[in-house]
Image (cartoon, rainbow, N blue to C red; front, side):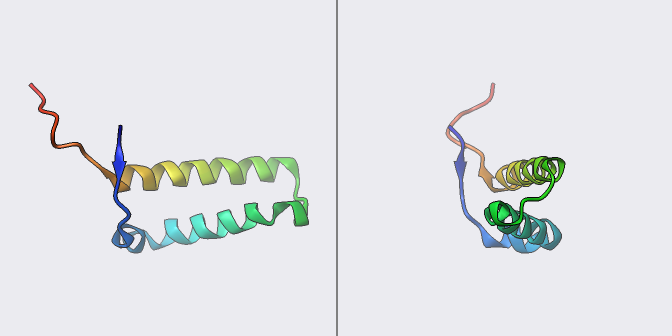
Length: 69
């Protein structure tokens, strides 16, 4: 099972990605109040999934106990 270590230096190293991630999360959080078009909502959710996977890959700590032969 992958382990993740929260390191704020990763978020500071990618300021544009972090700003888009935070603003996208905030827009989706208050989306029921705004009611944008469905296509825009799908694009925002896709962008949030992409950024979550991006930061997940950057914050992943490889398991050093397993040896590759």
